[in-house]
Length: 320
Image (tube, helix red, strand yellow):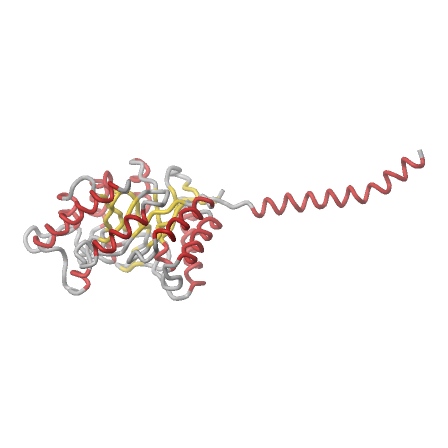
């Protein structure tokens, strides 16, 4: 009996140590568990961001895109829009990024940054098609609608009838080629007017009304108010959204305030709840935060955090 008591006395400290280690392991596991950012009111939506937000600090390279995947995974995002403006990533690099994203459970949509009428559109788009096809996610390839024809003319409100005709022809052909790769071609609204005057200039309304059904739309939630050469009334933007939701595939979630794009999310001129509810109802899940890019990486991360907190405060998202 004495030996038995001695055995338990000697064992007690060991049990205490083992118990303490177990507590630490459980605590560590709990702290290390990654939270996921999810929409509360509209659970079928997926929150992500565009790498454009970081591009002034992190130019497009294989390693930088992996860093973006890491950040998305660590912070609880579901997907990213990989912005490769001139399609400088090679196909092999995109395959490596796609494999890495898959291992982190992050979806990727691919985007170039060329206008339909830009001289190098087809050169960049052709490279981008092959790159975009390797990623799992929305299966989109995105471009701008307007391009150099607007950037070289600060007074230009919309396309001429000749420019509109060419843009429609190019968009139709791009959508056809994208479909061959199992992709959806989408065009973003930007500098062009919402609706033209029917004589001198034309806008995104006339463009979408005349392209083939295979041409999709990527909605920037601030551009109608902060970028378009003619300011859009929020009610008109809402009606346009509702009329064209059937050809919309994802959004850039961006804030316009006093007709200026903002560095982080806050109340937008077109209420985000209107946009989210319309997307949810029609099964369009992909939401990508887009912020004004700066040259200060810490500031960019901080602006992301402020944007996430805004969405939480408004009751749109939670972290689980």
